[in-house]
Amino acid sequence: MYRETIDWGIREFLKFLFRPRGFEGRIASLCVPILVALLGGNWLVKATVRGEYSFEVGSTNFIPGWVQWPLVILFVGVFVFCVWVGWKRFSRENELRDRRKVIVVEGRGLRDDDGAPLAAAVPSDIVGHRTGVLLDLRQRKDGVVVDPAELLNEVDATRRAVQQHSKQGDPQDVTLVYGGLTPVPLAFLTGIIFDDEGRIVVMDWDRTREAWRSLDSGDDGQRFQREGFEDIGDAAEVVLAVSASYQVRSENIITTFNLPVVRLSLPNLNSSHWSQAKQNALAEQLFEAAKLLEAKGVTTIHLLLAAQNSVAFNLGRRYDKRNLPGVIVYQYEASSEKKFPWGVRMPVRGEKAASIVRT
Image 1 (cartoon, rainbow, N blue to C red):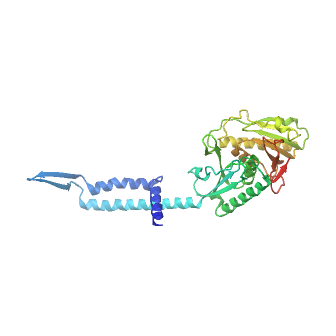
Image 2: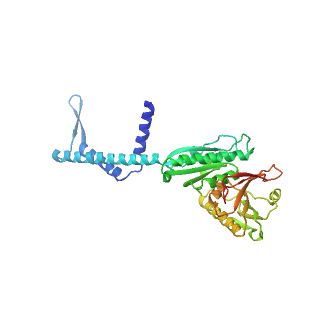
Image 3: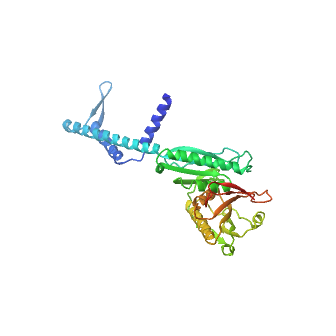
């Protein structure tokens, strides 16, 4: 216990010592050389030889005592006052840091391993007490979803856990950090259900670096191109194929659907997705495309989405729960006869809860 107390004291002192300084830090720094000059003067070391070596240490301070000591008292007082003000400021900053909460939601599902924790990779400038919430969608079969209906319960349990943590304080002091390696339909669903949780910071797994990474790169200007929206006639249901990381191929679509197909495709599927601004723009394009389909009388969108986890999450966040058509997001299975064997009907357009749709 004593060692922990000492460690805490050292950490707090170092934080105080190397914190960004306000005016009191600069004034205290100026007091130090002035006090050294007042108290030390110009020291002189004399050596004399009287059969043996002897040394005399003396001061050549020419400031009169009646001037020197009042100045020493004044500057010591200023120094102590500045240290006190700095410590009070530091204490308030610590109190604010302790009041703020960072809820870190990490989704796992594509690989049956623990890997690097997302909470450890959250940038240091996101200040607050960190609480980890694991969205565990693994079913002990690497890369295979055995029972998708079972996973909906896990998503709902995670939603309730996040809401519970968020209620314990001012919502303005809560930041939600999301990152995941989960099936596309469930990443989209997670985006929909967490959209109302205030400030959200999205991260993603960088397969090249083998590490979690923020969406902190510049926007390369790549945007979706529309195709087929003028050819759907009066269809009430359409397939919307969104190609952001891989091409959603027509030969795979026809294994499952016999419906009009419209597309949103990036011109360069190798373009970077590590930009929050770019992902926001792509999400806005999906919103506008769904709004256009709703205006044409479409009531259900069958969404085939080939995208990175963070893109799927952000697209889900932007999907309007009340005014856009109902949407089912499908899982792609390359080894299945039907390439899109199941999907998740999203809780939008009057649907109270998410549900599984089999094809």
